Amino acid sequence: MSVAEPSHVDVIKLNPRGEETWRYPGKILARGEKAVLLEAYFNRVDRMFHGISLRLGDRFVEAYFSQRGYNIFAMYDVDDGHLKGWYCNVTRPALFQDHQISYVDLALDLLVYPDGSSLVLDEDEFAELNLSAEEAQFAWDSLAELKALFASGAAQDLEQLVREG
Image (cartoon, rainbow, N blue to C red; front, side, top):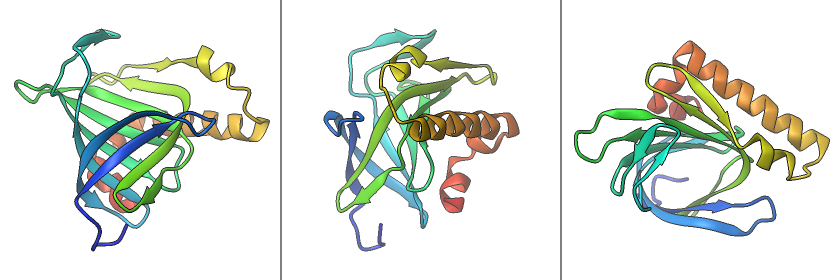
């Protein structure tokens, strides 16, 4: 994305068939050569998600990468701003276009709690995608990279990750 582009974008989540499954607005916080950091707000009904209370208006700080197979969302409470954890989607690399960021979700997710513990989610959905052996390996490698980023502490600094691309 160039500096001349707007500070607000639509985030578009696609399934592996390229069909839109979710769209929401975001505000660009930082740009790197190969990555974007944005702010968005949870826009769904309140719900419990693996022990985390997701609430309408929770602040998400989201990192998208054009050359990595994932995105990372830091989730903050709507009332007091405390960190609830990180939600990571294993994806095809994000596509940055005028006024939008899109990504193809490959079903595998990593949920990381503030204490560093984590859960891999949706392995059953991933298995049902019938991806090529190459793309499936790319997804597993991307998940391993995410786990390593959190183990090293690097994933907690999303601004630095965006600068690095």
